[in-house]
Image (cartoon, rainbow, N blue to C red; front, side, top):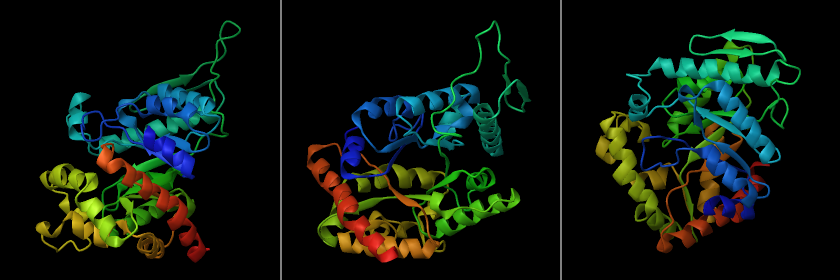
Length: 338
């Protein structure tokens, strides 16, 4: 919450709050409740779950909760969704293995939510996973009424991680904002390819201005200071103790490699900080940002991954990193890119 308040004061545009049920390193289990707390503490930053795990929600309930948050925020809500890829979540909700089923449920949930927000009733949606009906007015006053404040609805974004992400294909198909989670640059090209394929299937043109890229960012006065802050700080700890062991156990360590033929032990926090992430002095991060923009062909924004810098010895440097990104890096990036 302190990070979100800080982002609002230094001019960040958006904050996306993830959702996991059985991931203690990523412990926010109800981003909508956190957003409700953040609304009165902020003035202009847009807020959104990044994203709600659609397979585990009745879409009619979620449509109401997001619409209500949109009103509470004065129209600052973004609606991020995800298909859910944590196997312990699957077990918790009594799924043996979601596989393609999670994307199928997400696809149907999106259709239902958009139908609730956009199509007056009465109607019935006899789905494969949910049956939803928009009732006609009953007893003179009982009817559906909770439409979002933003019309036709808040921006909807969907997160994807795997190479050539099938989930991001849905972004193109339904005109959603793609949220790319990528620890190596090469996956980003396949992510956008997947978005374009989905858009082409629907007869649409994908809009790069909607594309958000999520990556670790750390800015300090010098390259050496920034590298040390990453390798020997909370970001390095999160990767060394959580993310890389998790992905190795799942057989997905190649996601961290720029060259898939590199040995697994070549994947280190220091290498990624030097070669893949936006880490360094303001000038270095500006150069890396522009290089990333040109490498991918362009995008609408970069999301700085938040790690737990709450301990006193880390918090001030983390907040300064975010300030340098907003006040030094982004003006320089915009000056170069136009």
